[in-house]
Length: 344
Ligand SMILES: Cc1cc2nc3c(=O)[nH]c(=O)nc-3n(C[C@H](O)[C@H](O)[C@H](O)COP(=O)(O)OP(=O)(O)OC[C@H]3O[C@@H](n4cnc5c(N)ncnc54)[C@H](O)[C@@H]3O)c2cc1C
Image 1 (cartoon, rainbow, N blue to C red):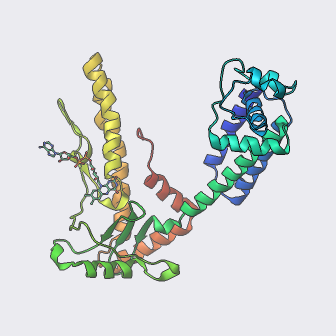
Image 2 (image 1 turned 90 degrees about the horizontal axis):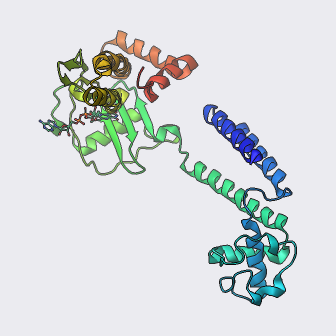
């Protein structure tokens, strides 16, 4: 049990380190190498967490004798000739339980024990399956690990801003900057796809835009608004009712959820226990985050949307060069984009 606890502690610490570090081939190689070392250490050790493996060997042996493994319990007199000192005494529930392992597992037990009926060999076979699993997961991740630009593209273009935001493998939300009060009828689907292709860089760096049916389109007037305080007497405001941000920072829903995350416990304390402290602090606490996100959304918008002013355009390009080439700049953007803690 102590060994299991130590192994679990090592596993948790390692998982924590891996999740916090940048992914790289070196991390992967170290992880796999240690995984193999840990498994080799238990290959020859006695089984201490589970003794099911003796049943695996037994089931293989029973099948090799031409007997249906589901027919008898190990202690049945019909199997007396198969008993030995190495496997049989260590089978659990041998006096009353039939095997529970399904047919495909039984085939594995049979094939494995045709090479050797030792527990070590059975463990080695299981490790082989683990290696296949690791390989399959790596293949799956490579398959799903699409280039970043397939998920989200923010495009600065002299014609105006464009955004490609994948919602699933086949559905995307796409944005095009158009002048205020533009009627949506001025933008038939073909014109939208053409403008998106130009602004997003269709054909550049091997990336292509795939057009499809447009299921919904509208012209969205963008603005920022914050209602402060977010409370009037017994009326508490949350979400879009209290603040509106332009969608460039993808913050609206996140802000609404963060508000509710603060408001729900505050209301519970107020109504169930008569304690008003959290409710009284709600507006100030929520507004700290609201202003941070409002600034971020405004900043992203002013960095990416065209105003037509050449001075502003150069400031935008300078800012974009900074956030795409400086680690400090990129980190600041990423921290705000991914989201600061709810109580920030
Ligand atoms: C085009 C677009 C894209 C967006 N993309 C993102 C994004 O990528 N990421 C992000 O975080 N946010 C995004 N947002 C913002 C996000 O959708 C909103 O900020 C969020 O939905 C606000 O949540 P809410 O609960 O405050 O308001 P809502 O979601 O608007 O909910 C209010 C509800 O109240 C109902 N209601 C209104 N009046 C009444 C009434 N009198 N009686 C009863 N019910 C009423 C409404 O029907 C509605 O269901 C986007 C918004 C738009 C418009």
